[in-house]
Image (tube, rainbow, N blue to C red; front, side):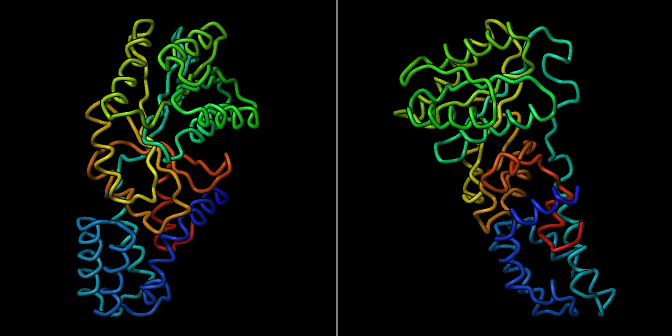
Length: 312
């Protein structure tokens, strides 16, 4: 568990750095005063925690400070972590134990990854499949971003590297047909999951949403429950700007969860909190680096401890 916490701590280093640079008292263990509270407020806004969360954290610390004038930074950090933990209650997405075909269904479960180009969706598809494989599941990956030749080749490279089964076609192929071929192959071969990478940009937003809808319609002709999981992959460096993007996809496609990528490359890691507060969509995985093992199941405990510089 400690190694996973270290991944969170390392992956959120830029967010933590923003807070530590501005809040010496909090991380240095000195007494809290009006100046350090102002520094903390600025730091939380800079890290994209948003108005509601920042206000809640500061209010709790101020109340504690009124009762204990000798309140020190590490105690304030623990209070901040407790507020974040409370706000994020229910935000951890988890696949049910025994899910997939081994859960009793004759059909594989489908995880459909959607989102705009540049979010890390294609590499995330391979990483999610690899994590399921590490958990003992049999997985088929479907290359349904047929709009971009680079996406198919990128996914092929990743699946070969990770020893995953890939169903792909040529650039310009019908994405829904590829999805069905993958589902049919997974069913015939007794696979537990199909992980589908979809296009992130077609000529217009309407074209993109129609292609996603077609994938769903084709799958549901053969399994009315598919796709069981529709996860939006969000670039964590976009911060709170990703909320509107999530709203659009949620309205059009009906999301069941989120994957937040590229947190290692941004100082705006607080946006996770705003996304959860706004949409109440569970966060299944977070991207904390480039390697396959750097995609980790979202842990509220690891996240809040890393952000506030607390030990695991």
